[in-house]
Length: 527
Image (cartoon, rainbow, N blue to C red):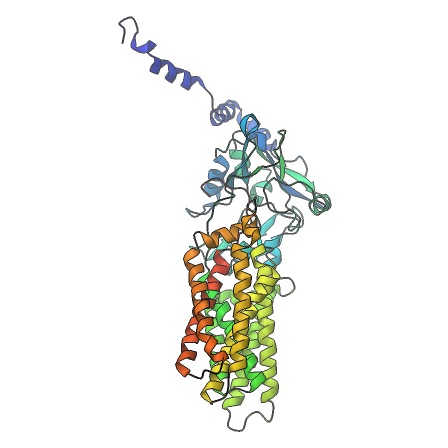
């Protein structure tokens, strides 16, 4: 260093001095806040709120000025601190939109929380009425003391808003800091934002409904607003490129497995199939006994999915609007008829000729339950869980296990099982062909990352081991079954077939949960 250059004049010192003179958004906010007199701070914060309260047909809603959002996550931190959330729990997130290229490149951070929808899917799907939409404010609130932790609202919400707390065994979500609004104070996220990108406004619910369901704008790369009619208003003066997308749109992260639901669905569908073929062919007494045992195990498995299983009795409260409530009610009826039917078989004199009617009632209620299971997932509006593929998976499992069970019972009695084996073989072939099209079909090669392409990519990528198990066991099942189509009668083969079928349908049910492309608000590259 030259002698003429003092330490104070060194480049490093000059840069440090320059940096200390720069003012960040957080620093500007802190300086402005400190300069305000105590009595004027209240009016400063009230700028983030509307002057009046909502009138009839109106409600509070978030307003986000995208051009002001810097992605600093002060809103996330404030929300987390005020609400005392778990370490891995967030009610507000920050994502990123991207698009364009070269001089026209576009990047924008986006802060998102609950949109307090006009027609909230979480409220409509809750079986225990643990959600309410306040008549005066329009805020969608979660009633923690009512929640049983079934997590169906998590599947129903297209914006990934409700968050499950393992510690508490319930779901929780943003309530727009309703207690602060009641005393004229802005939500924590709005107060913490150093650039005032977040505020609260009043919107007309009918206008929101009309705009959302007539193709109105919500936010680029966000789920279709027509489903729930979100009320958050995103504002920007910037022109969006045509190819704008969420920065994490190509992220391949499998969804949770929900092991209790995997077993519940598989066991209840097995039971329904066994009762069906028992009714059709008056199989041996062991068939309904096995079916009843599988049904009991399936219902027990379902309760282990609940964070608060002791409150499950309240699930009947949502019968008017929740498919989950209907499934619980119908499976309860199914179990009642199945129990009475099995009892009639074990009773020495039977039930005075009612056994046949009980068998029919059991079969009908069983498949009504399977139908409700299908509709639970169809109602989430997720493409991978649409009506046809879900019906084929659930109904196909019932029929496959029922056919195999009646085939085994006939084999034990020395009867021919050729037509049963042939029908089973064709059904498995049809299921495999449909699933292969989902994984390797034309939609999996689409230019854009559509939900169908993402599900296919998940199965070919992170979930390929389960996919290979599914197809290997299914093909092995078909190869082992082929000789029975031509008159083979070896009992050991039927036992191996039962094991292979259990493996293939179990792995299919795991893929059902893990490979679904769940709709979400735009996230960051690491989310």
